[in-house]
Each structure stands twice: as C-alpha cells, then as structure tokens.
Length: 303
Length: 308
Image (cartoon, rainbow over all chains, first blue to last red; front, side, top):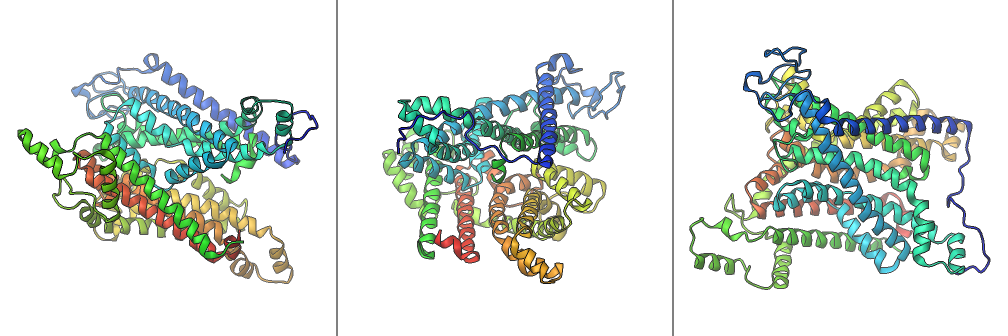
C-alpha cells in the first residue's frame, strides 16, 4: 500500500469528536468525578503506606479479655476500639488499615502483570495479524469461554496459596481485556495514512509501534487498567474469603469477612466493616474507570 | 455471503477449540500438582505397591501418551475415581448438578423477570426518579462483591428480619437469598443493557413513523421496540447465564448450598483432584454450550447476521 507522499503524522489518530455544550458540561463533570476517584485511590495508598503510624493497635495482637468487643470509644479494658474487636480480641480498625495493603499490592501488581501480558499480546496481534493474531485471539476466546474463578481455584489448590501465586492468577485473569481492546485499535491505526507515510520514509516496525502506535492507545490502556484494578481487588478479596488467598494471620479484607461470618449474629462489625470498605473501593474505582473513559475515550463505551 | 449452516459450523469449531484448550489446561495443572499416588494409598504402603498403582493409573507412561489417554477419557466423560467419595468423579459431580441448576435457573429467572421491566421503564421514563434510582442501584450491583452481598442479605433479611433461613437447601424460602445474591450482578447488567438497547431503538426513524401515525405508546413499545431491542438483550442474558455458573462457587459456599460450586471448594480442601477437574471441565462445557446456543438464537432472531 506504501504511499509515496510524505505527510505529517498527527499526534492523535482519532478524529476530534463534535463537542456540544451539553457533552462539554458532561465531560467537565466526568473530569471532576474522575479526579475525586483518583484522590480516593491515592488516599487509600497513603493509608496503606502509613499503616503502622495510623493503626491504633498491632493488627495481629490477640487479647482474649477483649474478645468480640462492640465498637466503642472506650472498651472493657479502658482502651477504645472504634470498630470493635474480632473473635481473637484483635482491633478491627487496625486490621482494616493493614488489610488495605494486601488489596492495593495485589490489585496493582495484578494490573501491571495483566497489562504487560495483555498489552503486548494485543499490540502483537493487531500489528502482525495473520496466524499470530489467530492464535492469540483463539486463546483469548477460550479463556473468556469459562468462568475464570474456577480455573483460579484449581491452580491455587494445586500450587498452594501464596502471595506470588495470587498475583499471577489475578493478573492473568485480566489480560484478555487489554489484548482485545488494543488489538482492535491497532488494527485501525495500522491502516491509517500516517503509518504508511512513516513506513514510506523508512521507519522500522519497532519505531512505528513504539513512537506512533503505543502513544495512540495509551488512553484506552489507562481506562482498562482502572476498570481492571477494581476487578482485581474484588477477585483477591473473593479468593481470600474462600481461604485460597492471603492466609491468616495476615489481615486482608476478604479474610476478615470470612472470619467474621460465624459471628454475624453476635458481632456484626467483624464482617461488615471490611465488606463495606471493599464495596465502596470497588464502586469508586470502577466508576473512576467509567469517568476516565468518558473523558479519554468515548469510543470504548460499548466494550 | 454465507448461509446459516456454515455460520453454525464456524461457531461449533470455535466452541470445540475452547473445550480442547480447557481440557489441556486441566491436564497441565493436574501434572503440576505432582504425584497423586501417595494420596491414594496409606502412608506406610511399600514401594512396590506405589509402583503398582502408578502403573495401574498409567502414570509410568511418557507424557504425550498420558495426554492422549487423558483426552480420550475426557471425551468419554471419564475423569477418574474420586479419592474422597470412592466412586467415579463424573457420577459424584452429576449428583450435585441438580442443586446448582435449581439455584442457577431461579437466579437467572429472577434476574430477567426483575431487570427487563426495570430497564424498559427506565428507558421510557428517562431521567425520572425511577430511572436515576434503579440505574444507581444497578451500578452498585455491578461493582459489589458477590460474597459480601450474600453476607449482607444473611445479616439483614435472615438474622435481623428473620424472613428467610440462613443456609442449606429445602423449600422455596431457602432459595430466595442465594438466588438474589447469585442473580444480583446479572440483574444489574441486564437492566442497564435493556435500558440502553430500548433507548437506542426509540431513536430510530420507524419509531417516529409509528408515533406519527397515531399508535399508542404501549403499541409502539410492544410491537416495534421490544423485538428490535431483543438481540443485545438476548446476548447479554445468555452471557450472564454463563457467568452465573462461576458465581455459583462463591454463592454456594456462602449459603452452604449443596451444588457443584461448593463441591469444588470442598474437594480442593480434601485434595480430591479428579472431582475438581471434573467440575472445572463440566462448567466450562456448559458455558461453551450456552454461548453456542446464544449464537444460534442470534441467527434466528436476525437473519442479517447469518449473511455477514
């Protein structure tokens, strides 16, 4: 196809959408909301990093005298447990604060891993086409073809639950989302005139991919990564809840919900406080992804 | 131009590839787990006995041969004997299947019966309070972790309000909470998609024509909108039915529901790998079959798809 007329490569491959006053107002609202969502994630990160300074107690210190103490400013031992204590007398608030570390570390590590694997495969499939594309997309379809949680459970059951296993399993569960979206965008970009122009000017495939294709798919990548972060945090909590994730006594939100289940009738706070925090986190992060998509890439809406 | 049969053939081929990949992954994971023979025998079994059982199970043969034998067995529904139940794994799993179907179908029915009318009403009364409230709730439902929803239901509707039993399988009251929990995500997704599909159709020219010729709003929706909005709704509904199977693992564990999801988790704790493999493979097979049926119903609903 190589076009011989040199043209300047546009910095953005998509045509600018027509902006009506209404959609502009909508975009501004989405921008503020997305910013608020990111502030929430940053705050959660601060809590996770500063856990030793913020937590009022040692999250694994047991105290049989103060078992199942209700949330109160001052407890039976004269010490306050804002969110009560669990069946081993451990402070729920402190465990909640430390638990955010597990959620964020596994969540972000899984997103990085899924993004690297899925992003690379998606770029490759879209750019190379042919049998490479066929093989990658067949595997992607097969993975989408069954509930991943069953496979995750099978793998963890065999390898044994550990931090690295958890990250790999949660990370690999998400690669398909990146691969499919990036592939379809690269397919469109590949046939654009500016790619032909660069090729005509002697630009190598690597240069086209890194300098011209990757910057153009970055915004979609960020949107998917945000949505995937919410999914990864929930999946980690689910696996920990089933006893296949983070093992006790390390505090994790899913594990706390599991431990509090038997005391739901008498000590509701053990399960519900981490559950509500998990629910809010998942809601805010996934909505942030939606808002980012509205700002950065409205064409992704159907995905 | 392609006819309906080649379309079906192509879909069937993809479904078979997916099943083959799933069984290969199951085989690889099983081999990663190491030697299952010591699990089958008492700890003081002599070495000769271990070798005998290993030969009996075909574990002394080269890996490619084992892989071929494994694929043949899977095709015949033979997943080996359950270590815990001491009968064929396939038969064990089949015994737990009705409970999962009962829960899955109820959850699915509940989701469709509640979500489609809500989506329809939200679209017809766009930007009303009902629209905002139900779509807000749907967003929460889509992001809420299933297992915690179940625990909230148990706490509020069972322990505090005393309306339903907390766990187990029995009369219809036992079904309500697990079905709501399992169906929540699907309900939210179906409601949101129904709303946007109906809104999409309501913008079409033929709807303006129908209104212009004086048809009542009810007739416009009943005769012209629903049928045209059906394809995306059927797609998401079918896909949701598939994801219900995955959600069953979590929901069945929370509510102690005796289905294959809970069986899978318990078998993991019992290190009963034949049963785990069988549940993973059967769920995948059901998922693939459902996706295939969704594709077929596509072709039936919209003849244009066959020729594309």
